[in-house]
Image (cartoon, rainbow, N blue to C red; front, side):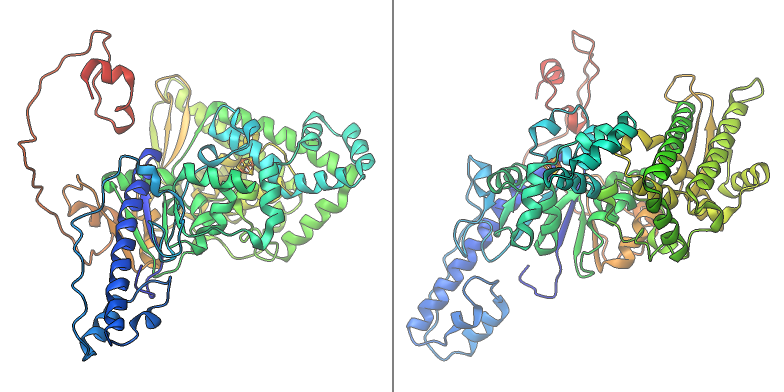
Length: 563
Ligand code: SF4
């Protein structure tokens, strides 16, 4: 942090409890650092008072202190030696780990002293402060409820309503379907409105903010902590978030695209990093999802007809945008969080051309998607028949079969996801979650068509049962964990992978296909014998024993096996 040439420190964790404990430790470490720098300033000031150079004026008052310069100045000075620096033997222990959280109280002291801004970012479920939205049951519903209040068209309609243009809307509501009524009745979020109306004035004082501190700060200001944090990322010196924000292209496009290449990326507890990379690129579609996708296509058809009757210029504008090219219409630049849509295809592999003519018209695209869905259904029927069973194919073989059976071309298939994304935005669909199955099918088609050439990095596995139930499914399984992490090695100068159980250590460079600059393992030293073989049975309620991190606080585990 003292080095101005160094970008941010980005610390990736796996779970929210891990994220919170990292923030707590960070608070202690940065508090200690500020204390040391303060002592340094005091000792330098004392030396000035005794006739030394004015070192403090070179350091600035609240900026980071350049320790090397300060040392040089001290050596060069012919003045009496500065006072001996007070030794501190370690960070002060505090019973209240949260006391370091939140905005820094003084200009240069405390854990956020010297202008350090440390933020963590998580999903809306962990950051939202809107009571009504928090009543939703799961993460997807919370995301959907938030989007329905923050999407550009939802804000536009709310604005029209409040400015007295409600009559126009009411007419539309009468014509529209139930779904459209829900959309027009949707309120906006006061915290999002507060954040947007503050505009440029939204800023965060330096400090260490964990999720709770962010929620508290947001509530105090009437600003949404989720959107505020995403905006403040560019000004932070330390960022703590989940692996997915760096590795999953869908989320990474939203969060980490503007990080400086000098940033230091740390993956903590990285012994499962290869599985996270593989999961980020795998797509599973079950037969019931294909039925849902068919229903979604039916809904989109009626929605297209409705928009054609009431606002055909909107569809015409979309067509024109598609003719002008994918980048021109802003599909790649659109903030995916506004639409909830972002493809898994990596940015360098996205075709930078206009969408092929045969899928530009909305109706043609719907017919195109129907063919894909029907083809997948037909393929799944073969695995459930008497001669069925688990089968595996390369993407090239799968694509070849799809093209010959359906007469579709490979190039439009690559555009399936971005074309669907454009259509959903044009139709201003209020609840995107209802279209998850369809977006999975489009993502599947885009990935198969994009990554079919060269060495197979994916396998297509079709099984008659998924998750132990007789529900056939088709999986696009990523086989190459380096696919997700390779862009990070290209983009950032320092990527650190660390874990207490990264073993065997030589395996990870092979799995993730990189050449380590430094690879080191350290012997563990303990002050007590910490390995004691233990034989245990199941508890009285037959609960199996688990050492999983998430289960450590589970009362059943604590009751049976202790803490
Ligand atoms: S804008 Fe923020 S506070 Fe409002 S619903 Fe969305 S996440 Fe919650």
